[in-house]
Amino acid sequence: MSIKSDDQVAKLTRHVKLLEQALLDEREAKKALEQKLDDIDQHKFESYKELISALKQANNRQIQLKVLSTLAHHQAVSTSTIEMLTTFLVETSQLLEGAVFLFDYKNPERAVCYHLNATASKLERLFHGRIDITNLLDDIEEDDSHWRRLQSSGNEWGKITEHFANNYLISFSYQPLKKRKNLVIIDLPHYCYSEDVKQTLDTAAQQFVSALQKRSTEEKLARNFHQLERTVKKLKNTQKQLVHSEKMASIGQLAAGIAHEVNNPIGYVKSNLSVLSEYVEIFNKALNEAAEHIPADDELSFAQDDIGELMASCHEGIERVADIVSGLNSFSRKDDEAKFSAVNLNHVAEESIKIAWNQVKYNSEVVTDFDEDIPAIDGHKGELQQVLINLIVNASHAIEENGLITIKTWSDDKVHISVSDNGSGMDENTKNKLFEPFFTTKPEGKGTGLGLSISYAIIEKHSGDIAIESTVDEGTQFILSFPRK
Image 1 (cartoon, helix red, strand yellow):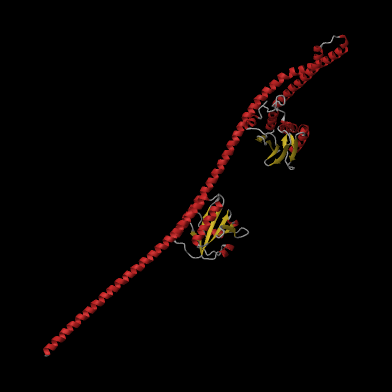
Image 2: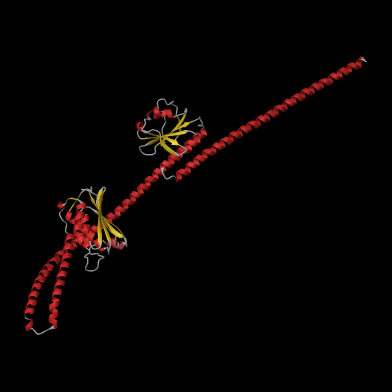
């Protein structure tokens, strides 16, 4: 009985030990499982954190890329550098959520300070006067198109310091023009100047400076192109004037020779006609006295009546030839420039109107618009009157009725006078031939074609220029320009 009890006790003891071991194994398994679950949760947590961080970085990067894209678009379509600058500052301000200040200066002691109104997207003057930013520049590394953090406390920066509300300041400087510089400072509410933000800001800054330089180059090229266009146009006009001057000089020599050769026969023909007129009067008187002794003859009576008209026609014709020769002499003659003196174009115009009035008063009204302070020019008053009278009379001939002739004077770097009319105008072909000797649009016998050629020679002698603006059926304007005395 005793032996059996001991066996049971031993058996129970072994069973308890087995249970204890099983319990211990279960606890170890449970602990391992709990550790494994903790590791899984920790991994999930770390993965979640990494996902949130990556998402945040992606969102930030998306915002930064959007800023760069917006800047690139605006820089491509902006019509002015100030618009490019304002867009750049607004986008940068929104990215960093900071206040933006711009300093524009050539001399640091006289800088103009602006504050960006991001809501209105415009720069506003911060101070009425100029300020000294010398000490501020001492704490800034300039150029290279990179943003820098300001390390100084700013106690030495003067009155601008009170407008910086925070301790985090970054700066960026660039040179918009050859002799001017700009400094941009952003006052950050918190330090969000991470490496990727810095990279975005530097990229935006370099992009802005490149666009600014490109715009400046384009504007410079455009100015040079327009200047070249003006130069080419001026050279063409000069070439045209030189060709015309050579033509005029050649024709002037020819005209002088013709005038010399024709003048002598004109003189004795004119003298002989005068004597012949006297003889005709004597014959007519003798015929009238002897009429009662002479048989009636119709042919003789007709000849006696017609000879007066024939003589008058001859006189008119020879006077016409004499006028043409006189014009040729004027065209070819070069007066001594020592006769030049100070001439007021207002006075010349007034006297020219008085002389030409009898020819224009029947179909035109003359209106004047004179600059009372017009400076004098160096010239020959009589020759200038000859030019203006010719232009006024020509304007009157271009008008049929209810005409208006306007004479205006003004000055800038030169002295100008214009004669305008509301007449028939001219086409391009007429304008191109206008100053050629003997060219005229007037009916035969009404003009020699020398008036404007002589006028051109006179204007050239006065170192002046003549320009024509004309439209068919609307009118013509002649503009004369002369150097100041």
